[in-house]
Length: 530
Image (tube, rainbow, N blue to C red; front, side, top):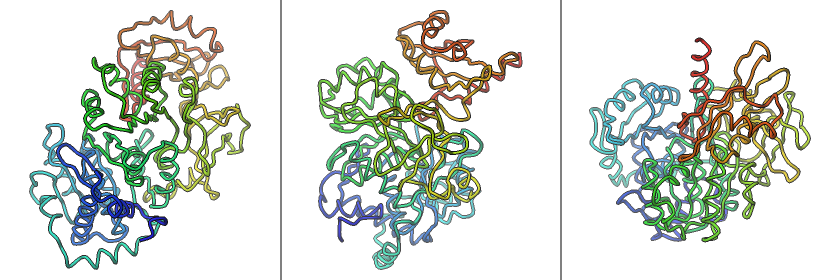
């Protein structure tokens, strides 16, 4: 095979199995797979899927967390032309049932136990309620109507070798490869479809921006339904010939221990993960010398996090990089640069990475000049193919020229760096003036005692809407409403200043580390009823 012209996801497994067969590829607990072992397992699972009746374009679902079976089933499904999707065992049965019934998988692979919970009832209910499932495979003790994953896939099936090669040869780069469901912050989650092409073209850029190298060891502890696991970290390691060190849950103390045990090179997290690790009593004693990159996205980083990581980097030479992206664009599309100062890391999400394109547009989708706030629109080879079985939703956000309208608001500075100001749905008007919550939140979060802030527009008889601020102090510090008012006065126009402050030891957070504004909205609605 010509390793310079790889255009299908699973071909990179074969490349590294040929070039570095004994190098570690996947680590989970006591399991360690070399690249040759990864390829062997991929092919065994691919043939098992063929025998189970998986056809080109069918879906294969894996209900698990980050463990070796995740990339193996993902690449195996892709090799036979199938679309892989990950399901999160933390989800409720209703949430899982919606995604399974929408995607109609042919095969469901599921862990029997997660975090001490027996998932057998959930697995049976999913299989019973979805007639498309032809084969149910369980990692661990099988449930009724299922087979053991290990027992089923480890059969050699030599008679299917030729069929596997035939199926692999029929896969094309623009075929659908990955299905990820959005968080569903508005309405039901939508299934985002990516192709081999969109995944590979995005990660070709990312690995250069991240300085991710062959042999680099990356930590993976994100849920496998998340773009960070499926693309940004998980697939990046496969493309570059790195090693994925998997943890099937996020545990701050265990993560710090893993840094030292596995001599990790790359840690990509959302800010709240870093903050929870910083709260561990041994954080300052951790040996960080192996780390080459700290990366984050998902939400803005507080000053305390940037300062702590910068102090480590000054000693070790590691890089700090953040950026902007989404499920629809297959991960990051903007990046800060190596050596950017703390102010840039705090206030921006970097600039668009060539050859990708970005513009800031008004409500008529006309481009705005630098410095003006508008909607982020992006275009490039990273683009999702469609929302699964939802052409009307696809047409709403993806125009005929290939521009994707994100609903995220930002302005671009003179350097080309973007400053996120919030979501279109979060902007509110007070006294006829537009208020962008992220701008106000950044000011509040710049106060030394504040860790997170969430600003929400609330109905008001006089001004139409006013801002309420929900504030979470940095652990060990305190701040009062009056202190925040005085702090914000010289930094914000009067109409932007919140009219009420609610100071809480904890704010509700989403899995991606962002403040759960839907939960806060419910709370506000209850307060307004009283």
